[in-house]
Image (tube, rainbow, N blue to C red; front, side, top):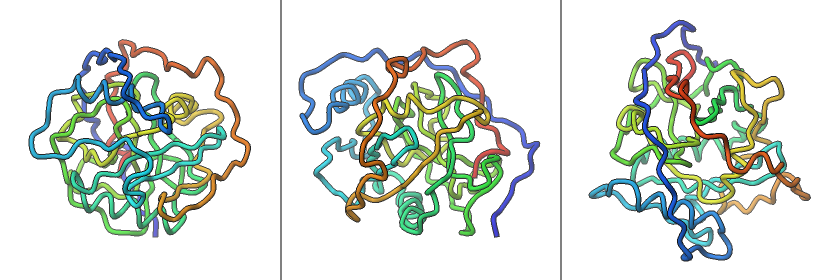
Length: 248
């Protein structure tokens, strides 16, 4: 039975952090053109002692790469990091392999902040039939491309919903479980339709783990509109919180 949360829970206010300036570097691999951008941001962020860095190579550790085939005709690759949050990564893999995320919309998408998905009801109050997870907060910063679990007021209430950060939001650090990073095609994430919910929501056509070798859902990917690259810069209202009634 899908679990629902009370619609009027108190929101957690976020600390608005300035966007990190990207220093271009020429070390990106041909098979993953996004790597230079994200590696530059990784260097700009404060070093995290004791936690492994993100591997941007799409040929490594295929069992820890999540593919999201979006309704905009694009495939996004996310590096899952079990070293940061083993139980959350295990949950994502379980739900992905059950087909849970297929067809689910991005129900809350805020310019300069994040895109949230993982609720089969599309309302922000739903989740999976599985038990909630104990928090695995860690010291990895919420930089552009971070993938983190949404939750309700209870720190141990993450279930199936997650969000992808458009711009750095360090106020989320140690308050939400950071479990991965977009390592390819962040432009497709930037193109996700905005709204709460959007009038014409972008959805996950297919989620898969790279080691399962599922072909892309769309055989002829559409080109992204020029307006999608880059995403709009953060505005004064971008410190809005993840609603407690909307996360798992």
